[in-house]
Length: 310
Ligand SMILES: [Fe+2]
Ligand SMILES: [Fe+2]
Image (cartoon, rainbow, N blue to C red; front, side, top):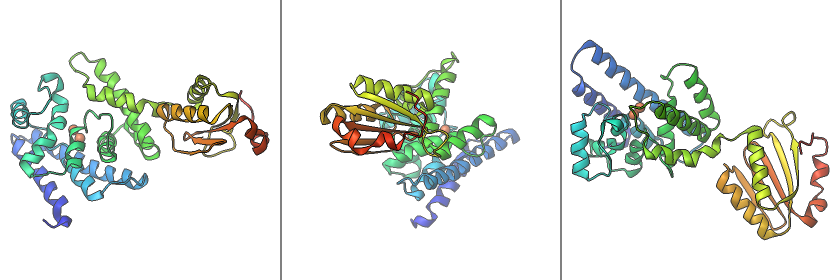
């Protein structure tokens, strides 16, 4: 099939699928139309996020994945059970998971009914409801675009949409946190383990401001980094909140500390040297020097005009 026409083809298929699930009542027709528009909204949002964040995702693939992410939305529990058995999928088809089964089994359904074999697309459909750890950029963007597409109205969604445009990993973390809270307070719902796995991985993106720099300080302390100085640059820099300068006794200790920070924080960039390492934690910059080098570089003199927090 000509690639140019693929998206329109699958869009048509989604419409036909929804029509086949409708009982013909005006109410149901309206619901299907809304659902269809939601999927168009997810396509637009996915493309917008890919472009804003310059992500390495094939846009055509993203569009097909987005338009089909809710393809299995109206399948019955019997259909889910039968697809589970046919593909031997390790998913519990139980009422508590009803809301997420269209995702967890949706990939198998589009594979069977539409012949889609692309693993990236199938996986992103599978995790669009629960998320998971180790998601690919396409999985992340489909999950997030589903959460924040423009059709989701209200202040909460407007706010998270704004964050998604600025820091999409943070937006995923916020949405996961809120989702977990919501599910745990509702006794009729079961929290899927994939969602917990995802939150474990993304929660580091929630840290910001003082809370975050306190955590960085305790990470430095844990790694025996000494002579820590924190400069508050919130009033001077449009990019950073704090600059931390610290001293280490050896290159080995410096490397251990950098690895520790990498595990616990979202690192935007790092220059790791033998005598000086610079770690960019988005809103906090950390300089770690070997003892004899800190004075030589004169870094503290450079930041002397900023207020010292610690
Ligand atoms: Fe969905
Ligand atoms: Fe959706």
